[in-house]
Image 1 (tube, rainbow, N blue to C red):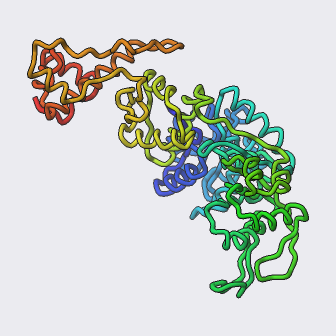
Image 2 (image 1 turned 90 degrees about the horizontal axis):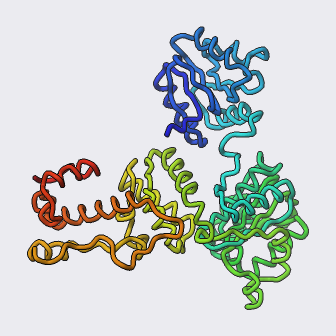
Image 3 (image 1 turned 180 degrees about the vertical axis):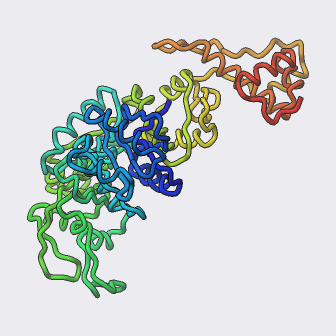
Length: 466
């Protein structure tokens, strides 16, 4: 499926590559196209540089005019630049000039200005995906709290996407044009965390050869995300509480008081109320941070989101040039039976792993890593069992489905499920016989020609011996 959302009209290959790479970095799916025909419907933007027939392209743009909801980027030295960038142009208000050689800051600002009337570029849209009832509630809470400066405490298991929630809140807030600064409080030694948060003056400690800004200064006017706040030491909690209460701080080794205008979003996978009872977390800091608590569901609690999450991860992999992968109906059903202790992060890693192993192919249940298959997939014999069958032809053929296989509550695609089993058994037969098709056919009690047809059907024929 073509998910192009930015068309690049540029006859100069070097420039086309530069613009395409920059747009991909910003999260778009650009595609270089010829001027004929112009198919901008549904696209978020168009880039125009040197083109073979500028007059024809200009006519097509005029026909699209205000009806096409697309931003327009124009190379400032392009033939059409003066006309497309004029206030009377069809795309007035959502066109911006691009200068070469490209500079990231200028390019990103031009894209932002051109897309602003169309509600922002992809990087500033809500990126926390999910269609389940649990995620609908989370997204509703994000929209409610984003416009305000209230502190937010994001709770949830590791891998549920707490930082993504924090970034989404920032991107939907009035502070979205200011910095978003993240710091993992559990990954920095306690003796260095104060300097990381508040900065230090020259000579404040051994190795402080120059003054340095802390995260509070870097996030001025924006959002500071304190990840794993539950791992912060008690002495550091006292200092953080003062900053949150008074909105002032001093650099380490300095005595100049600085005011700060920073929104605080904190996150933890720990039970802070239990940590308070254990004397490991300050109760007053907890109440200061949890003005608006927001708890994320574990992936096992929103399994209906698996397809949309997989699609989101595939799009990210495509932007990185890794490729993508598809899952058969039975593979998805098998993944729904898995517990997902690593949550969304684990799913993301699985999709990337399979995209590398099976680029742009369909993964069936039998091809999932063993830990994900569990008991949801019908038992398949090992290669040793297959060899025993070949040596003892009087034994009844191996059954693909055992009596313990249960029909899922929501039903199943039987054809797809049986194909998964068939592919798995064929792969095992080939592994057991060193890829010799004739021997594998004997193991599977079928004619060699029949097996060859099945190998061709499932795309397994390459590199095999007759």
